[in-house]
Image 1 (cartoon, protein in one colour):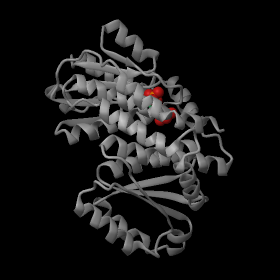
Image 2: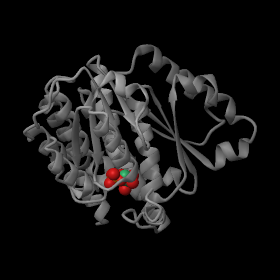
Image 3: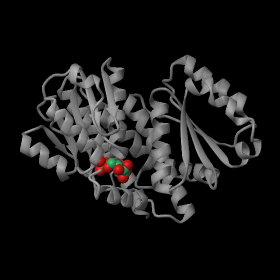
Image 4: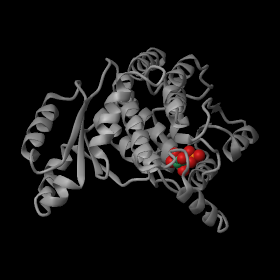
Amino acid sequence: MNPMRRLIAGLPSQLRWAADLEPPRVDAAAEALVLGMGGSAFAGSVAALVAEAAGRRVVVHRSYGLPLWAAAARPLVVAVSYSGGTKETLDALEQARSAGLPLAMVGGGGELAALAAAGGRPMVQVCAPPPPRSAAGCLAGAVLRVFEAAGLVPPQAAGLREAADVVERLVGEGTGPAVALADDLAAALDHRVAVVYGAEGVGALAAYRWKTQINENAKAIAYCSSLPELDHNEIEAWSTYPGISRDRIGVVWLRDPSDDARLARRSDVTRDLLAGRVGLAGEVHAQGEGLLARLFSLVVIGDLVSVSLAERAGVDPMAVEMIASLKERLAGEGL
Ligand code: PA5
């Protein structure tokens, strides 16, 4: 079995690890700012979605520095970096430290862990083997448990366990029903640019994860957009080059049964309007009751699609040579 498939099959145990985690001690907070890039930032986006559903504001910052509002608003700052060495995240963290903001860290070690230890800051050390994008269950679960400790979200253990059960049913030991579904979707997307659509909330975040996983694992271009925004611009874009729209692009719709009824109706009508104009690769429906189960049920199928696409293309889903060489070149300049 491709090692990446084995890592994907490990997602339920990551979610259970997070459910069993003893959350670190952090002060109560009214809002949070998550610092992170790539796979680590995704963990922040998952936690932000859960916090928003609980009525709390969480912003995910994916760059150097800090947003200007942070110094005055004084949010809880949670720096997430699997490697612990991502320059943008460390720079933002240093600025948060200088501004005296409350800090917590989530990661696998490196400079981030050293800074946490030196400053006596709360840190959750994640459990999963590399690469960072395969540690989504640990990273997101750990950020959520930090949020829980800060009073930003209600207790998370039950939601994490439900997500683990749903993903386990879908993937099993790597032979569950999601595997065949993902292989079929990958066959439909083969040699096409994947465009993944979902409605704001669970669908949109899952669509973003599909895009980034296809980028990194399959080394292929993919895009995502969300409803209702795409109804105000992107639906016009399928007409001018019909050959490309139908033959070179594959659209996947991610549907969440808990979508607001107005968004669900928009998805149906938009899909109808685009029928025949776009290469439709398929539609995937979220499973489970809670937000985390619904989200990770879509995420895991996207992860499997990305590996299946990598296998079809004969590329190694584990390797990220471009990212590694870019980091290496910029490290010489302190970036
Ligand atoms: O999935 C990946 O490998 C990347 O997207 C990384 O997550 C990203 O480069 C940031 O690295 P880290 O997660 O170690 O901070």
